Image (tube, rainbow over all chains, first blue to last red):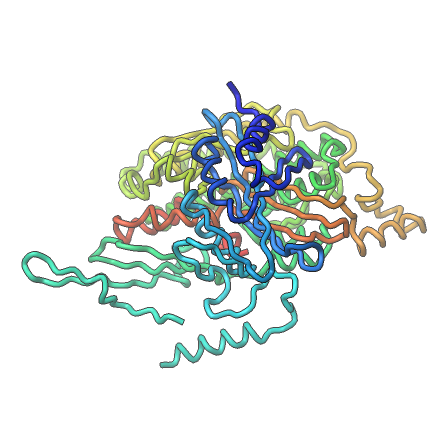
Length: 173
Length: 409
């Protein structure tokens, strides 16, 4: 008995009629738009009942001046199937508004989300509630702005300068 | 910022006989020869045992994802070299395939280009595994295996040099196929490599596989179970070393990998030695793939006939007005994929490398996300080394085979 993604999405739709806002199919990839506050429950369901054990990627996109709500958090979730022969991947999305960029962490479901969520926080300033250790990961720890936001000023070096000078000062005493 | 204190009071333990012991904090890196780049690990030690290991990354962060939002799709290609610079050709091909999927032109790519890309991809895999095994052995004191590995790596660099003129940062294929036809002696140099390389591979195997010191330093070290490996998102030899036969080449074939006869090596122990065995066997399988590809390398066109995407021939650019204009438009504005988003994964030597591209219909990517295998694999380090000896941290880092250029991007 093989797993049928189309059938599964229909079943999911019946099970979560309020929470799946949209289903898209593009170049053989299925994208589900999930209600933001249901993401944890939905992911847990996918992992526990549908065997999507592998979180392939977690990232975010900033749609400033393109659409509202501004942010999208994107999950790529993978199902190996028995003997790694099925390999079905779906994409989940959740939309976040500019004034409240917060979403539930999925690090308790997939441990790999730990660093991936930290990276999204580092680059977009999106907060993951319930994350065990939400710190900056790539940028300096006291860096101010969030570089992958579309309104990040690439020519402004002040923030880097400030954190560099602070590091120098910290090193002195 | 929180200051790092080197003796932390809160970790002190009072034993039954009244003695008080404290854990010591040891800072390893960022400048450390065994961290394969600029990786810093803060180790909390109880004697020689690691209680806690916290990696700090980002020393090599260049913001490639941001940079790529401001340049055309073709201009992004050189940036992908500089992520996993050990196997830059694999990053290049992975990126090109992602853009081709975004454009929806996979069917148009000529077979000659695809077969050549398979050969180069597998050469990149061998190159990366040679460095991975060589440096892992070097870190653990086996100097000679390293020298054998690097000698062979030079041969692969020579092949890459004949194909694209560059050795390390290849920036080689183009969207649509190969920029120029393969050099006349390509078949000869690849066949030559296929003849010479298995001998060296056997030599390296003889030096390590049954070497008592190597086995004792790697067997049972940095163990990760299959369940944890999936949970932590490990891919590549790190996942297959734990017994999960996931390989993107088999799972979602690209470049016609479904037509090649090869196996996905799996080892079940989940330790550093298993990962080494997987890499060794993968090199044998890569040789098998290259042999099949070079035997079936077809003649014919090497780049797709897509005037909107592919640059016109140089000769036409210099002699015909229309071609010059077309060249100018493609270089300045870039080709424009339809609005949409795709994710494309390839099996990089170190694991699954996937590009998530979003197009808004302009000539520049709206967002390019790179899911690098090293970044995700690196998370497993803490779990692997906690409870083991300091010296095993080196073995763990080497056996994960990370590249900091790709972790930090």
